[in-house]
Image (tube, chains in turn green, cyan):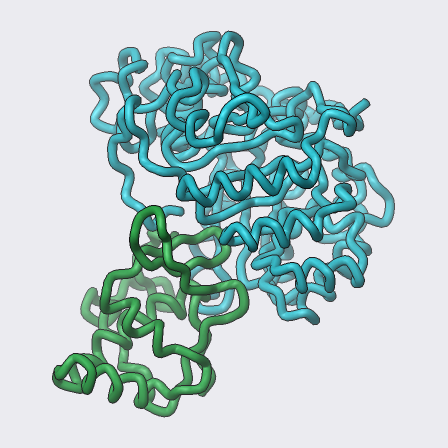
Length: 115
Length: 372
């Protein structure tokens, strides 16, 4: 995976906070797992993983909870509502966490976004 | 694979492997002079049959393997490739098809799609027929590859282009990235040639210059940033020009295994170049036992085998002393520090030799020949 520091198009280094907290995904956007990316239960290691071309991503409970709701139909807003209800947590916090997680996958082409 | 942090894997109880590379056959229509297959190729009659491979796939999944790479030679040279893909998916594996495209038709690709192939990795020898057909030593290969890439896109399968780079085609790196985008590739591997198998024979004909290696790294970093979210670029830099060696296989016997066409299980595709290593076959032993106990896997697993300067090096769990096969080829001792490492006492000699090779006119290629 790229270890390159975050840079703008002009090649100047962005401040760390600007690189790590992009604006949250729009509520109306629809995340989807593209063909070739799938959830898989690893029965040997007793964990859930996301399988993608040349990548194995071990999922924690939060990552799994988000991706289980990514079906290419539900909007990001609906996913966040559902998570907030299921975990009885502040919507804003859930939206920020889920957005950061999905953004990382979008950058690696492991999640696509239909707006 | 790189999502998992490296941690010491003791010789006695290794962690479960994540990936298995199945060299289904050594047969291939192309004759690339950097082929990673051994110089001694396996004949068709000796290849494992369909049931033999299906059994390997089931055992691999039971052992903890998640990703299966179907490779060769050219896997499409196997008439039962569709059955092998189906058997691998039945076993619960993620199936990556590594192909030159030659031997695939639209109909076969549809059948492979139906059988459940997860991802197609298409090799690219050049950005046009002149370079591609020359390197592959096969007229019409480029045109066919472009056709195959179109079918892959039509079927909606994820595509990776696998571009092996060397002194003759490094100049085309920007066009290589553009071509991958045009073909709708989600991912590209820009892999500087690794000097094993036939590439070791052709080292002087392939060795990039220091300047080419530097420029490639610069271009890749720039393109990665520009293409984030559009195309993933995995990059294998020229390790002969690096300060530290690549962590071959992420540590010997720690992450993956290779099975040869006849069913020998290797820690890496070049391991048979190391004399005296004892490889076990799937015909004689269960795969789990081979992974844990076979002499070839135990030989360089962990760090106990290391010599100085590796054994007291703070990077020993980062790069594991580099590549064992390269240490043998360049230092004459598979347990030595890979001479690619700047801390090897042979490093200066290696650098002088490769710089001389890269600066001299390129000799003719020795083409890979077909198996008997």
